[in-house]
Every structure is written in C-alpha cells, then in structure tokens.
Length: 377
Image (cartoon, rainbow, N blue to C red; front, side, top):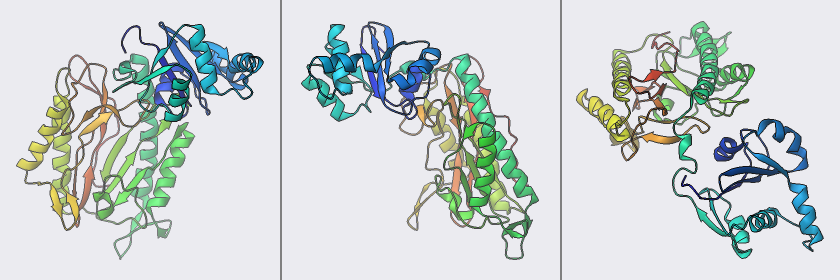
C-alpha cells in the first residue's frame, strides 16, 4: 500500500479477510475501519466496543453511537454508515479514500453523493498479507494441525473398515459412505477448535473432479481423496492437507499414478525458493507428468490428467496470493506460505492428489506438514 493513501473498509471481519487482518478480531456485522494519515481506527456499535478495546489493539476504537447522535442532532433522521463515514472524513479533511475491490457498490455510490471520492485498489489491498510473520506461520501451523487431527481420525476409520464381497467398505457392519467419514473428520476438527467446511472425501471416479466433496458408499481397492482445509475458530487462519489412500489392494496402474504424483510434489518442493516465478514451479510439474506419459486434455466430455494449479497461498483465506499455476505471474518471496498439491485424474482409474504446506525461506523451504504419506492402508 502506498504511503499517504487513506484506506477505508466497511465489512464484517467474520467474512472479510482484509478486515480481520486490519483489526484482529471477529465481528459478525459490517463496521468501519479507516487508516487515515497512517493512523488506524475502527468504528463499532456499543455492543462490540468493550471487546474491541481489548482485542483490536492496533486501532483507536470509536463508538458508532457517538456519530449517529451527532448526525441525528444535525437533522439526519436515520443516519447510515455512509453518513458516519462522510462525517468522520470531513472532520479529518479527507475527500479521497482507497477501498478493497469487494467494497459494496451501493455504499460507494452513497459516499460519492456525499462528496467522497472512492477508488478501488487493484490487486491485494494489504500486500503485506502475502509474506507471513513468524506469528502468522505459527497460526497456520496450528490450523494445519487441526487438519491433521481430522485426517488421523478418518484414516483410523478407514483402517478399521472391512471390504465387502461387492467391493465396498463396511464400518461396523454398515456401508461406509463419504458423508459418514466426512462427519468423523469434521467432528474431530471441531473438537480441536477448528471449523471444517466442504471437506472432500471422494472415492473412485468421484475423485476425478478435484472439488467434488464425495457422496455415497466408498469403494475398496480404489483411490480415496481426503482433502481437509479447516479454519481456526480462534485466529481465522486456515490449514490445508490432502492425502490419497486405498483401503484394500490398489492396482499397479494406481500405484504408478501415486508414485508419479509423489515425485511431482517432491520436485515442486525443491523448486520453492525466493526469486523463482510461480509459473516455473507449475511448468516443472507439467513437464514431469508429460515425460511419464500422463497427458492432459478432454476425453469423453471430461478433463483428464493435470488440469489445476500446483498450489496457492494460504493464510486468512483458503486461496490467496501467490498462485502457482500456468498463468501466474508472481515471484516467490521469503515468508510466502504456499500449498504444493499436484494431482492426476483419469476416469476409470481414479484420482490422486497429495498436498503439503510449505514456508518459503531464504534457503530450502520448510514443510509445515507432518502427516505421513501412504497409499495402501
């Protein structure tokens, strides 16, 4: 962010990562954050004032009711957030503000009518969010541990499952479904003080759609993708992990698929260095898959092969900068925390994806993920 720019966010920090980054506390309803001439302030309802003064330590906390009363006394019958923002900015002799790309267009129009020029910021609103501090790395690691707790519970259930004559998995004498295993994983994450949403438990051909959550009975002898990405209820930071497992006996074709994806992930991790273009890491993975005979393209109306990015930044959002994909134009920097998650997907064979989280350092990357990798369980 350029020096001298006056910043404005109006959002609920429970749902907006920039607002959560700015104030450091969860608030369920939209409120006002400003950085005027380098000074941070937050304007909140009386309901949140006491808590905000304890938790939003980087901000001067101001009561919304103070400005609403002044506006009401000045003849504004129903003062809204636009009225409050305009009043504060006029008092500070500010007529221009920079807002996030997600800023509400209706509110922007209301401010324009009140003489405030609103300019959306292109790209990251807080570029400093991309490079994580030591404290942030610890928060991501804690969320990642929650993901590993859920994964461990899921693996335990899969190990205890029996293989039926029809090639399905039975747990406690009933079919083990994606829904049941997802509930086991998500419950463990909740008990670890995390929130899981849309956890992926996709077996067989369902795993060939990378964001398919999975449904119905889980197959034996075929790959099952477990992709778990919880958010810490305390900090708001995310963890992210993916493992692919087979309960039973995988075919040789699946074993080779798994070994190739593992090789690709190890290659990508070796390429993670400051100054390396993110697209270069992705191309290295694509080239390896091609050399091993795994082509990418559409067949029978479905994509096959490797058709998503190699990874993405991780923090207060599950997908944030930098991206590691074919069209990425970013450069890796020390402090970036990124996922490395190559995958191969072939209907009839199944899908394989492996995902770890890596911290870019001045030397070799630090893998924050501890959970082991094994195909057959």
